[in-house]
Amino acid sequence: MERRDLDRRRNSLQRLQTAPVIAACAAGAVGLVAYLAKPLSVHFGDITGPLVVFGPTIYEIRQTATGADAPVFFSDWSSATGTSDNAVTDYLKAFPWDANKGDPTGTAVTDTVDWQGALPSGTHALTIAIDNAGGTEGARLTGSLPALEAGDTRAYRVYFKNILPNTNPTDNSSHPLQDGAGGSNVNWEFDVLSFNSGTWAPHLEMVTSTGSFIGHTIDGLNENTNAGARVPKDSVYRFEWKFTMSSAGDSVDVEIKMYNADGALRVDSDRWINRITSTPSSSVEWFDSPQGARWASHQDLQIGTNGWGGGTSDPPMVAWHWGAVAICEDWCGPYNASLGR
Image (cartoon, helix red, strand yellow):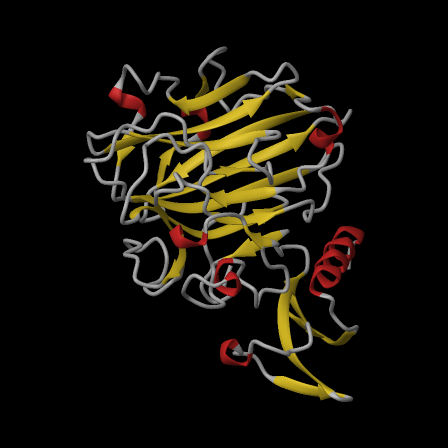
């Protein structure tokens, strides 16, 4: 097992307060490591894995993928449905989310989303509803990912469905997926700008050393003046982007792709354009350090809502479905149902 895999496994075990590894086996290119997870004192109603007795304590055996093609992190929220912390953090994963990041009344894991063939029927979603809190829902990783070091690459994948009603006010400020674990961004943010015309605009914003935002949009069009940069609501899309850290470890390049529900490439990397320089993301373009040492880490992630600007709702209004998040050392590709990632 590579050093990075060992570091990731160690961090995961420490967070779960686990006992030592008890078994390992190879399964083709992907190994399965079974280990004794956190002692079970309260969650018997949620147990799905086998149980073992170790002295006076009962443990649940969980499994995690390892090997060269294993993702750094993945979550399909398959552990449970509902609004509990266990459901939102996907707690049965060997590497779960660290925390339910905010208002629990608007965050739920559901199994009734129509993924339009992008994901198998019944695949769980992190479903976000906007309420009177104005949008603080979701899940978070805080300093838990392995550091992105000089020369490394790291890719992200997420499935997303925007079902925000057109009766809702235009929201030009939401950045609900980002690598900053708190309320602020660190290196990048995925923006969801929603309009009352049945459309929304995806952006990937990079943050520079001066604190300015440099956004990548489809074909470089400004979403407020040209509908060409927008895509229809109520459709499932798969977004992937990959960062490459420079050899000096002080700047990063990004490449972005977008897929339809049927897996067809909708927007290739040469059509994701830096709206300031007009450089396509398929070309190498370095973005320097935004906030000192934190740039070298890329160890946080949060998903759900952040920066919501579309008003409040009582009762809560379902806005977004997130599914099958993965972080990989290279392009993650589509969700593999047989591997659960």
